[in-house]
Length: 354
Length: 94
Image 1 (spheres, rainbow over the protein chains, first blue to last red):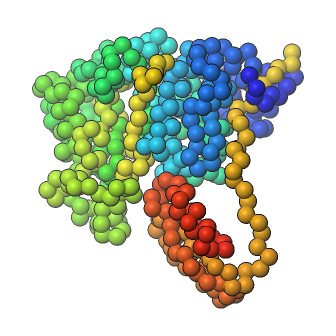
Image 2 (tube, rainbow over the protein chains, first blue to last red; image 1 turned 30 degrees about the vertical axis):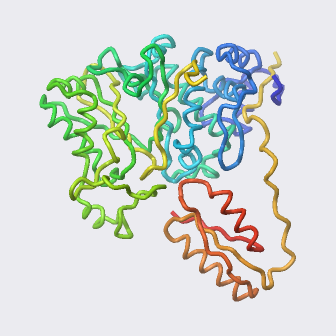
């Protein structure tokens, strides 16, 4: 390993020293001692100098070794590291828009959704308190990505990260799919990956809406609750959506025979508003749909006189996760108000294109 | 026991980003305006440009901006503008 090194007197002083260098997210980090980093490189099985991601504006590069250093600091175990790398590869895709999503006033977090058997192999939480604290893998995989963004790519809060409010997911936002309590096929299979492959999906999330409905058993009334949240004035754009449906909600949604695709289609159809609402509230100041889109507003974005969240059912990333009890789910809107960040999925620990 | 830490900031920023030489005078120079493409950036640029026009006799020869506010400026566009101006003023609206 050829990285720059620093010698400290002991581990406790090293923790404080990392603070002094500005290398933390505000929480203490695990000092990235050489021998710890070497264990991560062994787990990855990839050359330390291999570049995994590159910042499009500054040209700064993150190689496997640099990523490992930050994963150590985040508190990861070596077996988590392939998942960190897969998420990082997702961020590096041009359509994810790594620069914009990490610099913007919109303040997004890379929400990571892990699907497949690796969830159990590394002990991730897919159930109770899935977005909350208490599980080392969930917490530290998400945190490793944040430390990489800050330390390697220098997206520093208040300097190059201009988030107006930010949100707690920017510390760490990583969940696993609760496939054991899902009525539908796993996410990675929905997205066309082989059943035996595990994946990490990254989605630039700008926040978290609790979708609560405890008392209906009617699938459409339940989905109307989701659609209403997704079409709230504060959230409605033609950007993508991450819908994390609790097992209880998912069972109700599927009880009438709806497939995952049917649910996506229903939500797309109903998560919509009259365009006049957008105009009268200044969401479209110019009097035209405003999506900051690269390609403008395409035909088909409206159905009749309605403006929809997203442009198609596929723009709704539907995942089952959370505890078995409780009428609570989550909707996370895309940071992008248009097409400037599209979620990306990468296989973990294998290269399907090689 | 002493501990050896690996630096988490990775490799130094790649070369290729070179600061432009300082201008010795502003008199009569060609100025470019470059907006991030969001609301009010154009107004800020215009007010600023008027100062350079009035105080130093500068000429505004380029009034441009990013095609997509959420992405980096296209390198080809910046290279083209660089050939036409002596200095560039940018503004960030939001």
